[in-house]
Length: 123
Image (cartoon, rainbow, N blue to C red; front, side):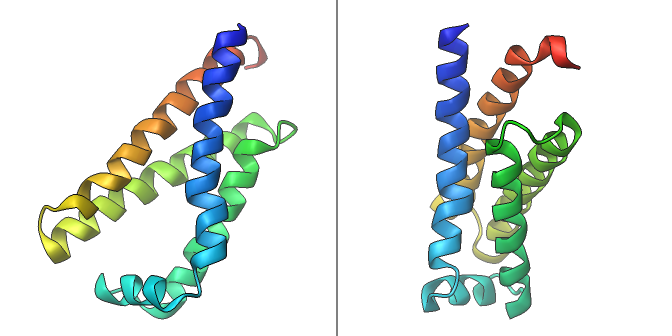
């Protein structure tokens, strides 16, 4: 049980850093804005994405959040990572930017699996 908690909190913390802290701190930089423009999205999309990412991270990290909300947060992040990869492939073809969201997705999957391992009796 202790090993499961360590794996869960490590994976979930990595998601929190990559999807909550880093975007919140860097979303208004020119590099981030150019990344959104480069993929063909309007400027407001980046702002909305950051708000939802931070809300999703909070849902995953706060233990008192209801299970159903956590499930929606996991689903939102899955869509986010898949569509990020699709966007990069559509604009730039297959390159390193294509695979990074999929790597983070695999960490999210670990978090999800261990979340359910730790909460099987709380369904």
